[in-house]
Length: 267
Image 1 (cartoon, rainbow, N blue to C red):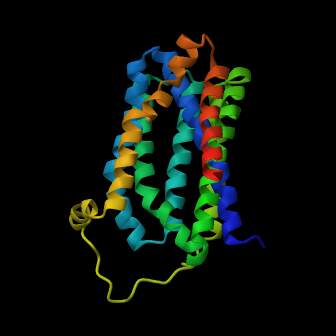
Image 2 (image 1 turned 180 degrees about the vertical axis):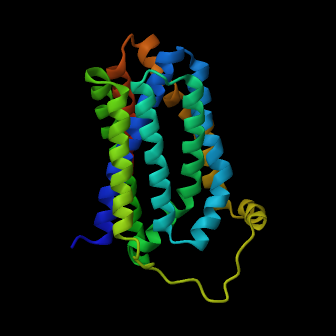
């Protein structure tokens, strides 16, 4: 029988490919409907901002419940969104406002399961193997970031966004199935001592600036989000207005980012 790590990684890669495919489709459909860079930025903001708010609640969920079950529920919720997007687009009923609310929901779900996702390393790999397991997981994520946009672009050219949303649905369900199979896996690291105290969120926020390494990583992520990520969110506009292309140009731009990320993760 495959190991829990192999089962998890297989489902995780399928889900991540579907996630990036859906992300490309949402950006392209938004551009088709609005032709507005403002709307592209608004959709990107709507995806990320709710995750900041729900990540705090997600940390409490990850503390109180097995990470596998928290993530399983998140995949089912995301799969329902993919179904709704596919049906609405096929019925020609999808509007920018609907996309906005859908993305807000996806962002909230993403933030809610993020702490559980990060905690999965303690279930899948012994502590002495974590330095190897984390780069492997990162490489898989970025490989999917290369493959997903390429597939999405092809399907947008020869099919429609409905097909892309259905592929994302398959990815979310595949990952949910993987998580269900390993639902009873115990932590590989040491458990918390019985007398461990729960740390309040306010205390964490107060203590983080006192840790230069952690605070530096957070600042790095902050400025990356402010100064670098907006360029990729505007790729549909670049593909159309700058390169006079369409779905293929959009897929190539996003795939190039993923290819660079794979090279960086391997390095």
